[in-house]
Amino acid sequence: MASMKATVGWAAITAIAPVAWGTNYYVTHEFLPAGHPLWGAAIRALPAGLLLLLLARRRPRGSWWWKSLVLGTLNMSAFFALIYLAAQLLPTSLASTIMATSPVVMMLLAWSLLAERPRPRHLAGALVGVAGVCLMVLSGTGAVDGLGVLASVAAMLMSSLGYVLAKRWSAQVDVLSATAWQLVAGGLVLLPFAVAVEGPPPALPPPALLGFGYVTVVATAVAFAAWFAGLRHLPAGTVGLLGLLNPVTGVLLGTTIAAETLTPRQICGVALTLLGVLLGQAAAARPAATVSRGSARIRRSRARGSAVRPG
Image 1 (tube, one colour):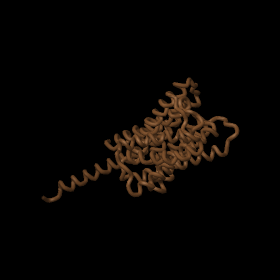
Image 2 (tube, rainbow, N blue to C red):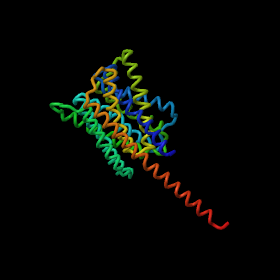
Image 3 (cartoon, rainbow, N blue to C red):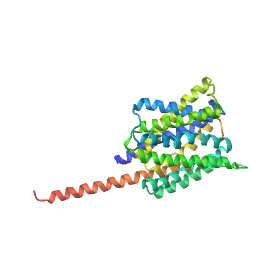
Image 4 (tube, rainbow, N blue to C red):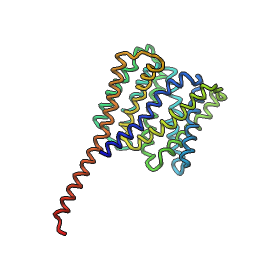
């Protein structure tokens, strides 16, 4: 029972990340300056990393200097830039559908790199969840830009690999420090490219400053810390399926704030996506419960043995 409660607790903490990322679309569209993707990504990543570094008060040591650079590039700098490029070249519906395949890729990578065999409920949850996302967001898109598809697929593959590597490498490092190092490294990688491609940083009026404050603190620092904490305590398949809450949040936020209409098809899509997420949580909780029952049986067996053993 305690293991099941812990699983549910870590799932709730991890869910903070995709929900925060789902709100990021609205904040970026409404408050942040357009046309500066590299500066936007650098301003998002670097201050968030420095904030977490201030809290963690720990610098990288040994191999973590290059590991931070690798993870920061996969999970932050290159990922942020590719996502922005995909958003510019593809309809949001198609980009979201491509990203929704990430749980399947994470399961396969975790199987090969972490020896975490995909569980049937994880695979079923992924299929149901992807179908739900398609119902929610996918519609007739007309002509499809090949470069946009390539950017979206590359972003999905890079982040999936980065998350699994973070789970593999971060076991001996606290979550805040590992997250801070990745964000700082990702931001520093972005800075020279931002200067070379986009020139000086854009002027930020008060609404943009407030928007960046939210994106930096909530949708980046808090969100990534919660996400990597979940990766440490839950199977990669479970965490990947929780990521499907991202498009659900975007759709529901559009209906509540942007006054968009939620169609019956989207309602079915939301229900299917949530069902896929729940299947992933059930898959994570069931082994924990099985282990607990097995341990209880062993303790009872030992107790019976000690009761008949001669003193």
